[in-house]
Figure 1 (cartoon, rainbow, N blue to C red):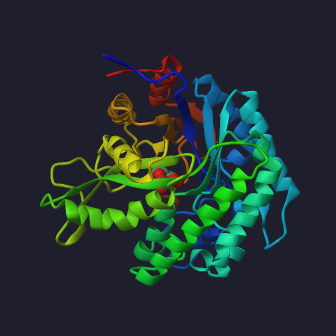
Figure 2: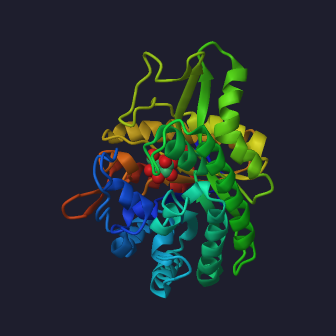
Length: 391
Ligand code: GCO
């Protein structure tokens, strides 16, 4: 059976500056990677040298038939010290925008993707109220230079992951565990930063949709207790989904399932395949998250990230086939889903996991940086060029 996606459905891939550019030494993540007892398995180092190799990467993306490219700006390059803005860094991202447009790729620009300049982190980071104003000021300077060519803007990538893993789990900077007060404060400052930057980006130059992207899950309760799911989801997802009401879109980013029970958040269910990332193989996560995001955020949606970290490329194809079938079901039911961005264009630095998690459609040789299109990249290329999915 073949499923056709709507005409104009936007097919893209996503990356992030720190995970691909290389040499992002002036941000909190580089410091985190080199801190004593860091949880990071390895430093980001040269990453995939995308800062210099992006023209060839965009050539490959365009050759595969994609129509959009989501990437992020590295705040620490653009504002290396407070109030000191780099024209050269803005020129670099300006060239990236021109390179996208020259290849008929809609540039989807994320203004914050997990990393903050060292000077921001040193002054309280996301638990310091002034960070929201500082972030909005950075967005103002960036959009002044870049806004005329941006296709879609994303203020902050997964603010709920920045706060949860930074202040409750401890695997992201600043590495706090069970810091409930810091977690709540970070959520407040992150949402304030989103609201301020949304207004700044909408003021232009340029006229493009603006929203935030959110880490979401399918949810299950081991006793079927929906109220328990609501309690967890309200803090982790709905706080930002409600905060995003009135935005031009909400970016759904969902990979797996979260299970809860009387003892709290549970691990994978016995008998369900577990991926190298430690979570369940759960290809209907995007479908479930679209439904919940639409209900709470009440905005148009893009799936701004979806994919699977695996060395089994056939498994990637199976996952994507089922995931896309789920996305298509929501569209058939009338949900306003406007595009799908595969995470990721290429294998890259998977945060604390380093380079051992491979989410890319392109393999990257860690020695030579050579890119190789995987069979899953060819498979997805067929889908995006035909705008149809064979199930
Ligand atoms: C995230 C980030 C990406 C990850 C991807 C795979 O959603 O955590 O946006 O940077 O690399 O999701 O885990």
